[in-house]
Length: 248
Image (cartoon, rainbow, N blue to C red):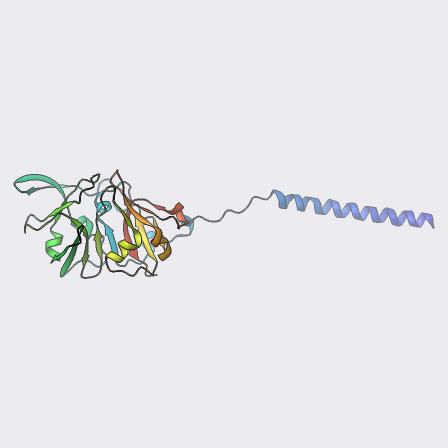
């Protein structure tokens, strides 16, 4: 009887050892497994050329002053031309560089709003003929001048086309609330918009994120976005070229 008990005890011990041997490596493997990293926003975003373009608010300074390749290369980036202003030859950038970023173009009339709150309307053709005499590092509004018609805009804040798109001027050291920029041009602040940088990097920004966000002119001349409630890219969008209605 004792011999049978010893045999049963031995068999039970062997079973316990077998279970321990088979379970330990599995547990160890689980503990040492590397965590799977979540894909970054850049990994999940659509290629830029797959986006559906829509109405835009184009930032004047960044449309002319590129610091990174994306829409322009070193060979195609904006260059100034010499124009005559009040009897003097000055270097200025043709407005067609800026207008090229409007999705719907510009016809009819353009409504211009100045920094002092006054506004005026000029024809789209007259606006298209403007040249920007601009110091990107200055806190003074750029001078816009059409040498053919003599039209002069010396205090531009933003201009809105009949098609509902806009061109916004953000001088060095200026700071604007992002939602107010959107409201200024008559757009709905309760929807999400897409911010696109000069290198074609883009980020969707929700109404709450716009409400606390800012569009800032920097001492270097670039215009950047800062959104404290935005988790993507730590809430920073450098070299904002335009704000766009999100169609898709």
